[in-house]
Image (cartoon, rainbow, N blue to C red; front, side):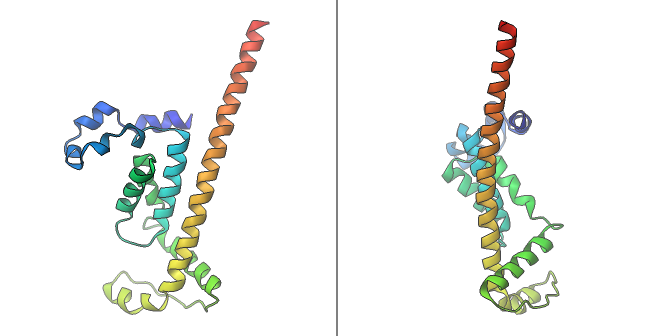
Length: 175
């Protein structure tokens, strides 16, 4: 069911070849495994996308795309999952990461008045960067590992359930 939903949004091989500008990236972009929806590529994509989403660095999309290509994950899914951290969720997620990092490093939590300015980044981030990055790394690792395991378990359960249901229907039709 989820596979069919995802497949509606994934372009076909011909649609990929017809997209202007993609040929500039080379032939690797047309690799079918980067676009297929299957258990392993989906689980890897969730792990990559969620890990990259938690990293507070510019270029998350490029990191997710590179990792997806290198690890054979679904490329569009890996890229789209980085938007878990967006302007609405970012303050909550990153503050929780900072608090977690401060707890793990046993440092006091500082009151943070965040401003989106270069001055704030240069003057204030220096005092909290270690717990902040540690917390982001821990949350990203937990999100990646748990999503990888959860996708694998749910996918296998769904396939097994579908097989049992079809076997049951065949046995009732045969009798």
